[in-house]
Structure formats: C-alpha cells, structure tokens
Length: 61
Image 1 (cartoon, rainbow, N blue to C red):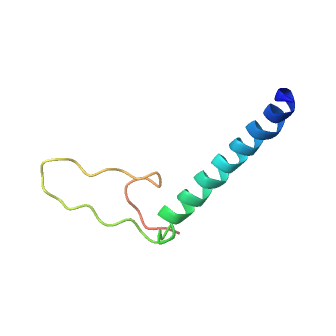
Image 2 (cartoon, rainbow, N blue to C red):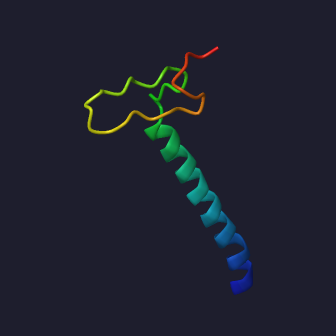
C-alpha cells in the first residue's frame, strides 16, 4: 500500500508544485511589456552607461 501511495502522491505533489510555480510567474508578469524599448538610463556621471546586446545602444532594425 505504501509504495502505491508514493507512486501516486509524489508525482501529484510535483505536478501541483509546478502548476503553482507557472501560475505565480504568469501572475507576477501579467503586465510586463516585453516588446517596448528599455527606459533610457539617467546620466548622472557617476556610473558609465551600459552597452546593450545590439551594441552601442543603436536603434532596432
């Protein structure tokens, strides 16, 4: 009886934990706008500006 419960309860718990994780990620990022440009950094003179992956902060093509 115990091995049967382990074969049923452990995958069920892992599945429910995964579902909870995916739903929580979706809930936290529901208003994320992944297609917009990142905000321009404020030049304070203290820290250098970062270079993006596109290189030299050029416009998207």
